[in-house]
Amino acid sequence: MNDQNAKTVIVIPAYNEAKVLTQVLSELINYFSADNIVVVDDGSVDETYQVAKEKGIKVMRHFINRGAGAATKTGLIYAFDKLNADIAVTFDADGQHNQCDIFCLFDPIVRGEADLVLGSRFLAKQNLPLTRRLANYLANFFTWLLFGIWVSDSQSGFKAISRQAWQKIEIHGDHFEFCSEIIAEIKRNKIKYCEVPIKVYYSAYSRSKGQSLVNGLKTLLHLIFNRLFK
Image 1 (cartoon, rainbow, N blue to C red):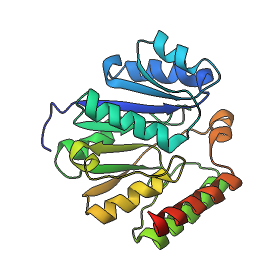
Image 2 (image 1 turned 45 degrees about the vertical axis):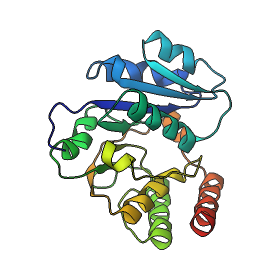
Image 3 (image 1 turned 180 degrees about the horizontal axis):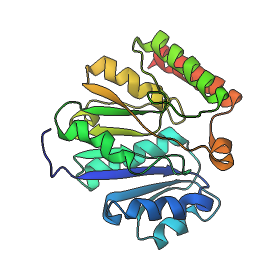
Image 4 (image 1 turned 135 degrees about the horizontal axis):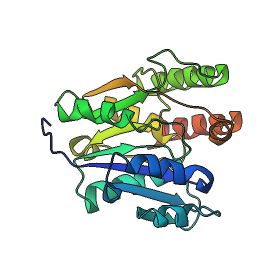
């Protein structure tokens, strides 16, 4: 891209995140204009929508809970089509990500080195729960098995996507399988990509928001279905 003035929009899918969303948005607003942040309230039954509105953030709203993939797609469509973003960064609402890492994600795109950047929790040493390490390895393995591309953190929700990459990407899944689908789209469309290390903070709250074993199995079944029939 090689454009230091590229417009970057932060997309935050959120489901029942009112407990932590105030702090997450407050920290982001220290670095980015509220006009360049979009929250997608995915059918929350708590105060998620109100928290975002009170912060002056643009809020898209699903009136039923459709899933993390659907919420992310809604946010990306809005970022590129309505806000004319050059780059969109997807950012989790549960407080596990460091807002300073956003600069590390969009920088390779601005420099023209990549069109899609994956934030990886596993490229730098940090104290991560063994269960998360194991689950991620299995997800990486099945993503590679189904789609033929290996990355270190296939399930990361922290990504930067250029407009050029987004125009090529098709997302079918409404749930967590969308992360692996994006990896598949990198391979299918020969999108220039890279991975960068990110910091992650797992509180008791953010751990409770992650994938369970049952959800992980559902994700795998969705991926297999999409691979075979879509």
